[in-house]
Image 1 (cartoon, one colour):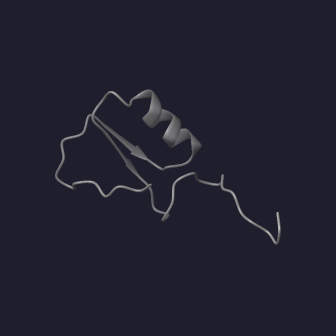
Image 2 (cartoon, helix red, strand yellow):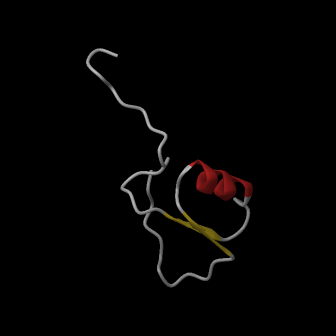
Length: 55
């Protein structure tokens, strides 16, 4: 789920990229005031699930 963030926030940590490394960093820093920026319309980077035919 992508949640729009306030642009005027005061963040301790800014993470650029919502791939596996960015999401892992966000998880480790979850108790801090962080924001994750992702250019795509979904997080996960190159990891994703796709349905092909019946599989």
